[in-house]
Amino acid sequence: MKIRSLLLFSLFYSIVFYGKTSYGNDILNSTKIAGFASQGYTRSSDNNFYGNSEKNSGSFSLREMGLNVSSSLSKSLFSSAQILARNTGQNDDDSMALDYAMIDYSRPLSSKQTYGIRIGRIKNSLGFYNETRDVPFTRSSVILPQSIYFDRTRDLSLSADGFHLYGALNKLSYNAEITIGIGKPRVDKRSTVSTLLGQSAVGTLDSDVSYLWNVFFNKNAYTLTFSGAFLQLNYNDSALVVDDNKVSFLVNMLSFQYDAEHWVITAEYADRRFKYKNLGTLLPFKELDGESYYLQLTSIITSSFNFFIRYDVFYRNRKDRKGTNFEQLTRGIIPAHTQFAKDWTVGLRWDIHRSWMFRLEHHWVNGTAWLPNQNNPDPAASKKDWRLLAGILSFKF
Image (tube, rainbow, N blue to C red):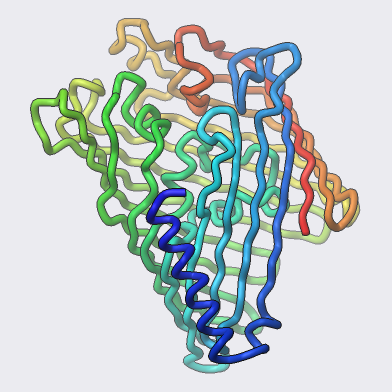
């Protein structure tokens, strides 16, 4: 664990301990401990995802374990933290990390209105699944739509150290909530640098203060959210002549879900805008506007079994959807298919027991835009059309 993670985790438990000694058994009784563990498998026809999946035996690299604690310190004060160990064979290596640790203070304005503040390491409320993507039981598939929830830059979008202000309105006919967050995202992994700036980038990134917003609305079976974030990263590399090297990133997401009794329609769209300052030696452009979206239909066959089909699309550059201009800029060294990905997926979920779950899904992919660089170091060797089988067995307590 890094020092900042240890400090946040220590702060969380100090507050919980203080609460217990001050308020007695009520807090002790409200404390909940839960956890999960899962083992996954991937096998691909070409390219690698979650380890060396292209091998005949596939890859068992995907492993996830988490332990979380939550407690109500008073009527207005709630605390929660989670430790996570994750291995994907690409960006994560089984090392323990502080996933989140936050204190939530809320006050009612009336019987229907509430406002509050969350402080600590907080999950970013982007889209439907970013806050819960680490728990196998709460995400929508083994591999979330990679057009929206990238695995190779997962830490960057997952959480930030800072605070969130929020206000909620709960009425009989609808629910609504607005969240505004300020903090510093996690950019301490090599995978983030290579993904954003290319594999030739050997420097490091650090983050300035970032901003997040989320507007949530639910009425009956309909849920709609508008969320987004703005962040600025500083690139540090002694080999560059100019010191002021920056990456600015703005994303806006629109999410929609219709939840009927036996089926669910989910759709999300993201608009991404990058700006690069003094990085011309690494990138052939100063601006890049990308977009992505997916549409998923889930059929709830029984209370313990469901089936889904999904179409997922990602373009790095909306002005170069086929990637041909990029291939020309790189003089053919990097293929055009690295600039887009279109993924048809079918999958199922079986809740074997209240503590056990099994998922299985198959992907037919055209393009390689979301492949991890760590498992696919030579983009010229990647295959444009490929298939991926993914399964996972998960346990919770």
